Amino acid sequence: MTDRYAVLGHPIGHSKSPLIHSLFAQATAQDMGYTAIETPLDGFADTVTGFRAGGGRGLNVSLPFKLQAFEIATHPSERARLAGAANCLKFEGERILADNFDGVGLVNDLQRNLGCLLKDKRVLLLGAGGATRGALLPIASEQPALLAVANRTADKAHALGRDFAAHAMLQTSGYAELAGHAFDVVINATSTGLTHEPLPLPAGLFAPGALAYDMVYGKGLTAFLQQAQAAGVTRVADGVGMLVEQAAEAFLWWRGVRPDTRPVVDRLTVPLV
Ligand code: NAP
Image (cartoon, rainbow, N blue to C red; front, side, top):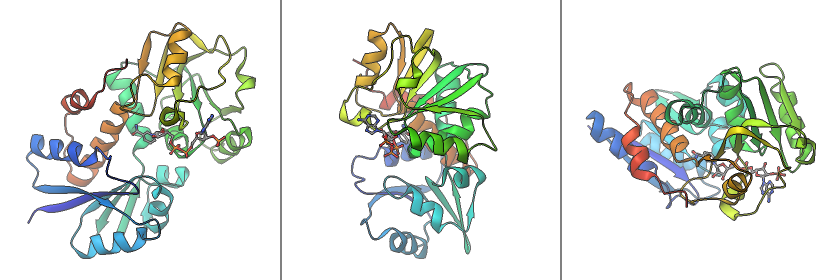
């Protein structure tokens, strides 16, 4: 029987996950189906229960349900626990396993696809929401020279610093305190990629040869990437590779097979112009 998987979100019509997983399944000859399920805002748990009852094997979870996905799990991974959020569930008998692959997807994209090794680099994350939470542990485990988080609401960045204190030494601040500091990798994990609002970035933020990375995807040159280019940065990327790499981690977790991500990244890439 064909194994069933799906992505839950609200809204979910825009999701690339069904295409990505069907391309992975074709390439690895896996007998599986994958659909997008529009999930009512007050109906996450019921939708999960119904999907499991119908024989579903696993789910990806998109906004705004990543916190609830963590809470519904009986066996969350350590990184899901630290992020307080999960983007992937696997059903094994009575057990609901949860993991969070956003951060490892980001690190794999940076290191494998973009050739940007994080070890000994000065890395800055802009934003202190769920995407940053998920990224911190995977980035920290690559041993950057410095890992900093700056957020509009500085207190949220400081709270992250406390939450992760046992795992990573974070430099946390608002934007103004970034003045005088330069970074090799600057990652926009705010939602301004969707709204085209510029960030208050001080001059000199990008070290020579820096990479500017916006987690949003399919939006072309975002305001942040334009700001980076105006500051002289020539290496810019969006989050399409992160999306595909987190999907590959989920696929491996569910199916035990690692798909080749390159053709899928190429297929989904929107030129940065
Ligand atoms: P979130 O939890 O809602 O966090 C939003 C963050 O953006 C907060 O830190 C917020 O700051 C900041 N922000 C919003 N508007 C701002 C503005 N005008 N100026 C400065 N900061 C602003 O969102 P998220 O889940 O972390 O997602 C962040 C981004 O990552 C989204 O664009 C999402 O699409 C992307 N993402 C991509 C992937 C992928 O696979 N490529 C995966 C996950 C997420 P305050 O705390 O001050 O409000």
